[in-house]
Image 1 (cartoon, rainbow, N blue to C red):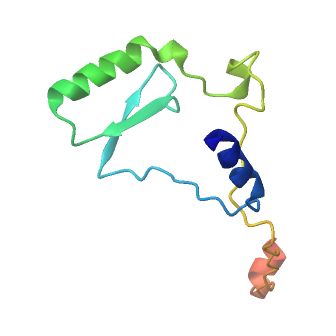
Image 2 (cartoon, one colour):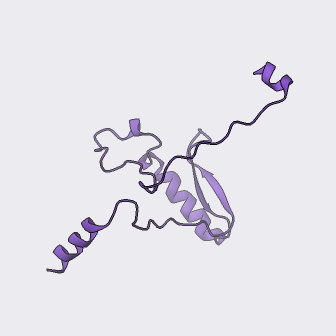
Length: 110
C-alpha cells in the first residue's frame, strides 16, 4: 500500500515544484585526460591523497572506453533514459530585455 500512496503523491505534484539536488564540487579539482583528445577528461579532487589519486587515475584510464562523450557513442540507448530537462517553473513568463543603444562606431561595424 505504501508504494501506491507514494506514486499517487508524486503524480499529484505540480510540474516544476519538485526539488532537484545537484552535487557541488568541494574544493579544487584537476582534470585527468582520458585519451589524446583534451576535451575528454574527468575532474577529480585535487586534495585527494596521492595513492588514491594514482589508483583513481589508473582505474579511469583502464576503463576510458566505457565513457560516452556524445549521443552518437551510445547506439541503442533509449532517449527517454538519457535526456536533458531544464528546471524551469512552467508558470514563469519570458523576460524581454530592453535593447541597449550602441555607439555609432559599433553600430556601423555590426
